[in-house]
Length: 385
Image 1 (cartoon, rainbow, N blue to C red):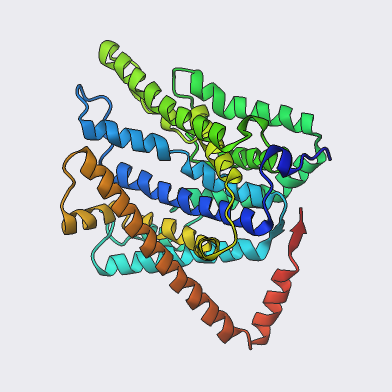
Image 2: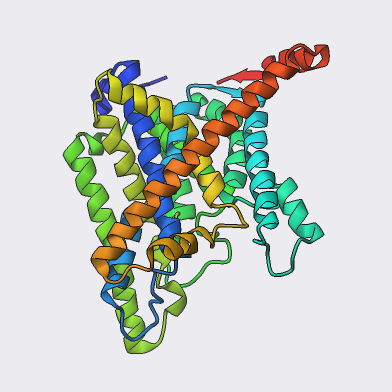
């Protein structure tokens, strides 16, 4: 295949350096995801249809623009690694068990403290806890799960294509799924705003292209940073422009936040630029790189605990109950930073505990013949990409 080495399109790092910089990106992406959830579910994104927007509203929407590409970045990371990896049924099962652990344990614990949906502890709520993928409990995990199932087909298909063929297919896919919805001034019935598996298969292919061929346009740190900042500014500017039109005409009310959709072209550009920015960063082997690589595998736990259906709208209130609500733009920024750090630390510690429990359970079961046979069978279910 006509591959381009990473040192011509992306900076060449040793495996340790490359792992450290992209694992750092994994951490940063999760921090930004928490920013999105604090602002959105914490009620700081002022309705854009309001006649006047407070300063805190401008600041919140600005921070939202800087962070909105983080979900795409997290999927870009998966695509970047998986395209040169292997499809493992065991990994899929481990992922499901991790999601199930958080879904059930947090759900039951929250219920014990009175945190329940309005209808109470119903059969449907119990099904949501026990079938988190099928019930879309965590929409991102549902999208990721099905994307992972399609990964062998996508990866093998990509490697059968020439670079030009891949460019044609990827360009058409981005045009249909991303660009059309970004320019047409009406909601499209097929548009899921990026909350679906199809979009993340598209993002996976973008990551695969970056891994295989690189992107000459993002040739250095400063250009990548500039595109990221310009895209974030464009997201906010387009939103304010649409708001201005709405206030003057009363039209386009359902399009005001379109640029904040995960599958908007500006969001995709911001995500790709941010990803390439970290590809250019070199982190030397040392205490910091080892710390980053030690912490990064637990970042998914941050998402799984704070986005649980029982508490996704509650943890912000817990913070307010302790510290009070922020007053003013500067305090909002400080509160957001504090909330992100607290949620992240709690999530990392919880997932370390979860990992320890799984390890102990594995040790206890490892002496059972049936369990050993199951492990061997799962280890054999591997598709090399």
